[in-house]
Length: 325
Image (cartoon, rainbow, N blue to C red; front, side, top):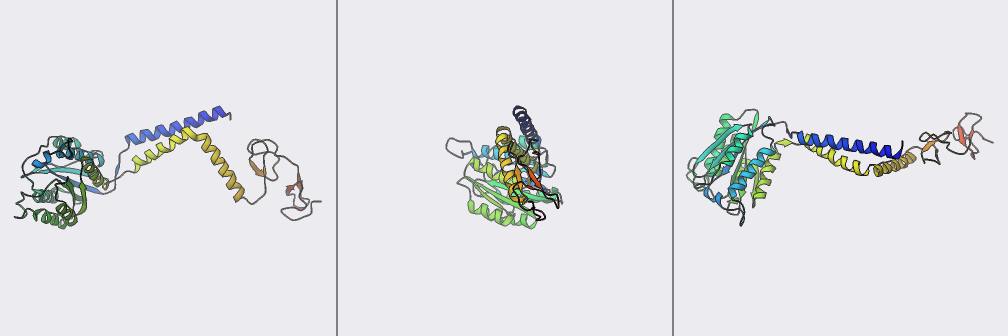
């Protein structure tokens, strides 16, 4: 094959793999890990959420909205049949913004419409999530609550008269009902000890988010435990393979050929003869190269006893030991 034709064929192969990988990556859906999940996001919308996360930055609530939307995208809500998500918000009062749904448009609209108000009822909100999951969660699903707050619990009344004890009792109730409660403390004013204890008692994970980016990372990290991105990342790996194929295939081919020849020389114990034209290794008795078809060189001596072809300078047959004189 002519070098130019060969290179064109190499490029066609590389671009074909790249195109298939790109299409697969774009249209692939991150598959569920095999288990069903009913999840409630329980978000703090108290008055303190109107404050900026950082000097001159977005408000905490805007960051919470972004993190929540990224969470829905990470679990592929709508295209992943094994995950349903609901939304509860809390300030002084508790609001069930959306019951469990697989329709992301419903939740997107509710999240975008959130506004900050009043005080903080962390315990009441967790308890509400527990009660609703017990009522509407599927028996075959795992039940999960993700609670995010930026402050102290100061307005609880349903679970306990002590607002600092109420969130922990609610987390205990969730754990007893086989509900995993993850807790995210957002900002430097959050009660870190309370959030850590909520996660501990609820059998979930604890996250501290100092910034809006940290909050997104925490929400996406929790979402990643619900999915197994097999198809998606296999396609990405194919893309990474295709790029060097396109750019460096001739060099890769040369390197692979060199390695193959080295392995062949090491693995095969039988004597070989190298073609002077292309360097290919052939059987000792070969008259013509099996790679390029050209003569492979010096004459050979056939053994008078076993007819085995030996080197021209051999004195004894390498197979039976008979004299070649």
